[in-house]
Image 1 (tube, helix red, strand yellow):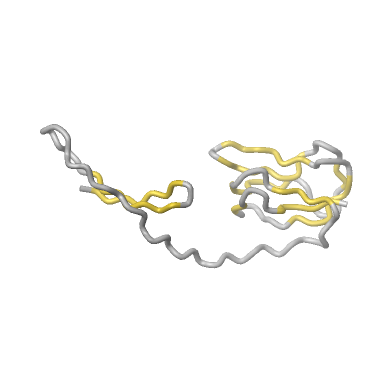
Image 2 (cartoon, rainbow, N blue to C red):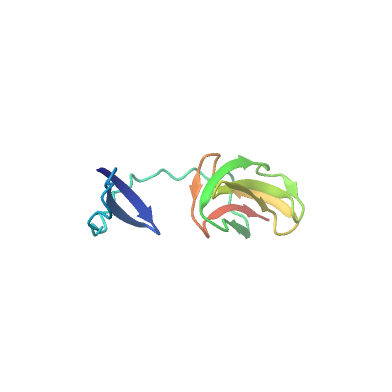
Amino acid sequence: MKNYTITVNGNVYDVTVEEGTASGSAPAQVSRPAPAPKAAPKAAPAASGAAGSIKINSPMPGKIVDIKANVGDKVTKGQVILVLEAMKMENDIVAPEDGTIASISVSVGSSVESGETIATMN
């Protein structure tokens, strides 16, 4: 038997899997939610520059894999600012309009949640 801890939609489950049963089906074991492990408080990366009036939010949870623009850079609508990896796919986060990058509040390797502000523009 092997024990696994599986997280589904934020719920943590302890699952036991029996191996090598050749005589039909094994008795079903009901899994119950395990107590959620306490996450260590993660230090928020220091925001680069002052916040701007236009917020750029993460469209989905994921991890920042590249930062294409710097604070103070002038960008045009549709220009890639950050690259977010979600579900093993890289997604370009683009400027919603022309402007100047006021702050970038994430760094490469940062995990972000859906709706989290990751940069601002003026």
